[in-house]
Image (cartoon, rainbow, N blue to C red):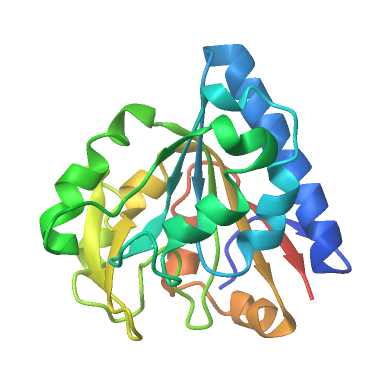
Length: 227
């Protein structure tokens, strides 16, 4: 079953990135006007890079915007696999250079040991103003992978919002992710992916982590997609 969302289709990734950056900017600006600060949760991987290049050009009071990650690979920030690395390289530049970034990776010995410390500075941001999620080729979102140990607890919408240690099917296997309760503690939820293969997967994603996340959302998710 396909989750109920508002779908925004674009002919290519560049047009999608431009439109989505404007939609996000509108929500962040509304939050700044309403509450004086805004919060943004972003996803890693390669897909958001073009979006981030558009978004970092938007004139906002970025010094009053806090940004964190939906998930992180448990590697040092300088590692090419690090989501923090990608966000600092692609988003925290130009107009957005003065935003406050709250990383998930910390000095703990493992993701399991670092989960509570990672969540502590993020918790005051809830409810988040905007969360942007991607979708993997297996239907995962954030680091909520199908069949991963601990997935059922991480997908419990009634749990306390927080960070959880997860195991990926590929290296680096050790991950830290916001749990479902945290991801859904949001005013505006967006999904962003590209490619025909993922669109076909989307049609049958109802019982995969991505589909379950959106089916349990209390706000109307907005899906931005291009071939």
